[in-house]
Amino acid sequence: MQDLGIRVLFEGKNLIRLLGGLGVTLQISLLSVALSIILGILLGMVMNMKNPVTKAVTRVYLEFVRIMPQLVLLFLVYFGLTKAFGINLSGEVSAVIVFTIWGTAEMGDLVRGALQSIPKHQYESGKAIGLTDFQVYQHIIIPQTIRRLLPLAINLVTRMIKTTSLIVLIGVVEMVKVGQQIIEANRLTVPSAALWIYAFIFFLYFIVCYPISRLSVRLEKKWKD
Image (cartoon, rainbow, N blue to C red; front, top):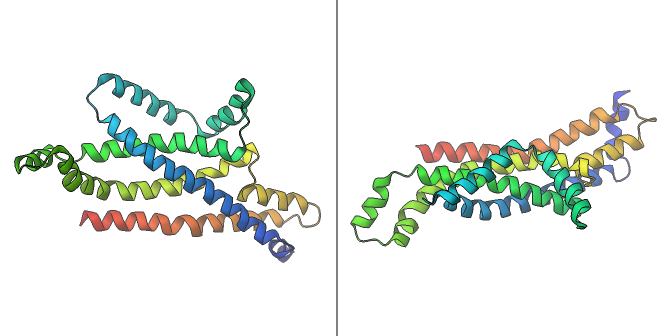
């Protein structure tokens, strides 16, 4: 009977364990996003420099991260670095490193695009009224860049949260891993448990990501008007 499957969610501490797994997912995601935003802003500014060397280096970094699947990067950091250099990295730390590398590249490209979208006459107008370079950025460029950047940065948060489901493959006990443990524990007694467990995990991802996604769309529409 299907109701036996849904009952598994409320047996023992299964529900609390799944919510705890969601907490691990959010901690890794939000920490990675915070680091990505800080480093991505710096990377985006470097990418806008006229120096051909910095442009070439940042372009190689960006293309490397875009081409390399996140799962391969996870294996490279978690298994490769630990074996090659004897570094003891936990799954959580490895995940933060990989998602920060990925998020920094994405954020850096967003910042670069946002800065380049500001018309040149905005810079020239600021200097024409006697503003210094710092004041031009403070009062003209940065406010406009934030308006262009914020919806895209918020969207990056949802992508980061969803992509963290990959860390189950390096042994991190997050939401998907907890769900697998519950399914395995009830595999013989409640074969239909997988349907309800994965449906509930989908629901948790949805209630976390959907409001963030809607906020991104709303801000984008609001600032376009």
